[in-house]
Image (cartoon, rainbow, N blue to C red; front, side):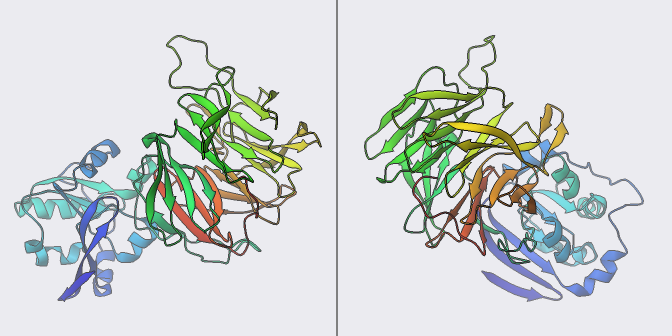
Length: 439
């Protein structure tokens, strides 16, 4: 980190993992009062266009050609987030430091709703800069855009997390993130599924490629012998990847398996939402299903009326199987019989992330994990929803992006990892994951 102070403004350079090198200037608090006099609600429309999400995303794809200038206070950025910026300085100080803005790049200004950004853009345009537009980050985020730099902390959830525990960003920019599992050395494996590889995050947070050409692995598990198992999508199968690759179940009736849970007995429970990218045009939609693959590799259909079965997890005593229903309001549970078969289907817990969307109802329920006390953690639209062993809601941990799957890792399994949308997050907890092979 390099920093120097000029007047009341501190300029810094840092490497932003998502968008390369950025120059950040943190405005001093003595400009805060003046900035308050220029709220986002501008009295007149800006003289430059307000950019929509598609336009912003196109500019973010060319970081060497654009300079983003955020004219908000540091506390606003911490509360709401921003984009990978070149310069952060309040509008009242902007005219003093025009010489620090490159004239060989397109310039985009940022504020909460493009009010201050519009004013700053007009000032810069009048000064001869190539200003292409203004951005309101709250509007960008409301349309699905991803923001960076916002500080996320947990609420107090007794036995789970202390108040104000920081959600750490381990790494971003992966081409898909799914299927995390813990290794005995404290590291984490997950599938970078669109890149068809498995990535390892070391105990120190450093990533490395663990395995290439995984057959479209989506979810992972370890058995008692140390074999690495995967749900594969290209082609569809439940398979052992290491040490010697072989399929345990493949071909029809599988369509596109998604997630699974591996019991100590060798029984496997897995979801198959039905959709498959390779499905022929005009073919009837594949029906979703939830399966039990017994220890003799015989396949049993458990349910075909869960609208979109997704994440799967076993309770610590392995007497209950939990299934996420992405299109449903409730987490589903089954009782495991002594022979491994399932019975007593029931709605286990109502999900706070459930809402009506343009394509129909969705809770966003995705990956699941349990802790040693039997609490159930669900990646959903709301973040990480946590339930007691009886299905009572205990709290929700919000994340920068919607999570897709969860795992406890570290040497004592006390760190809760969440992966999703190309990112990996880590949270220090007051509890521990279940100490067992499997998932």
